[in-house]
Amino acid sequence: MTAARLAILHTVDGGDHLDVEAIHRGVCDRVGQVSLQAVYDSLNALQRGGLLRRIEPAGSPTRYETRVGDNHHHLVCRSCGRVTDVDCAVGHAPCLEPVSDAGYLVDEADVIYWGLCPPCRAETGSAQPHSAHA
Amino acid sequence: MTAARLAILHTVDGGDHLDVEAIHRGVCDRVGQVSLQAVYDSLNALQRGGLLRRIEPAGSPTRYETRVGDNHHHLVCRSCGRVTDVDCAVGHAPCLEPVSDAGYLVDEADVIYWGLCPPCRAETGSAQPHSAHA
DNA sequence: TCCTTTACTTGAATCATTCAAGTGTGCTGC
DNA sequence: GCAGCACACTTGAATGATTCAAGTAAAGGA
Image (tube, rainbow over all chains, first blue to last red; front, side, top):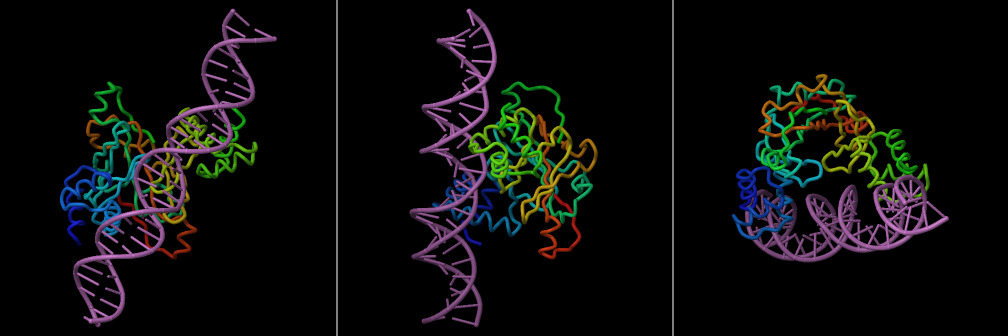
């Protein structure tokens, strides 16, 4: 574990679901010039090692967080892309076992709630009651 | 609604969560040469119009299906990328309302179960019991 | 000391998707 | 019947996140 990789962990930990570019900037602030590829490589290594969790909302670049190993999901703002943690609705994820798994060997469930974050909501003036469907 | 767009609908309807390239091939089989961009454009239009649903699993190209407006999610095979429909575990999606929505105006919940499909499971010989965590 | 592994560098490639600009066709209103 | 217009479609180029490739350097083991 090198200084650069520690800096990545600290940056991700201190940030809020940062994307690779933001992590790269943060790492350079901490330890000086580091190549973008080193950041990609390290992020992959840290994720494989279970120290980071990857969040890949459709249509926006990958983000990372340090909160791993627990049961939580994400709210993603359609307008600004902000990602916010949200605990699983029902404790230890009963709704995350599909009724029929069609013979699949399921090892993970990804849940993403799409919507508008409070600031963007205020901006667009949307106030209708929310209802999550799928 | 042109012949090309009808062909897209029929192709997607007759296929199984096809990606753009496969849809393009199918459309060309039905109505002759159609540009890839026309397919992209039409798919977007059809999706905006609520006739198609987009599925965008992390790390693989976008796929489309005609099953819209109901409450179902997807199983995605980590090995071959196959996508399979799965009904929502608990009827009309109670688990899809996050406990705290952090002020977000939520309009949709995307759930993707990751695992191995039966053929890939047989290939790799994985047989341990499954448990979905998040 | 040699050898291997691993982190890192620079530079190029990939690939899905989008952007841009131009062409043809069908419909509307007169 | 014709001007005007919207829109589907075409070709060609651009974008942008991510990965691949090849080489260098430093660390650790035998």
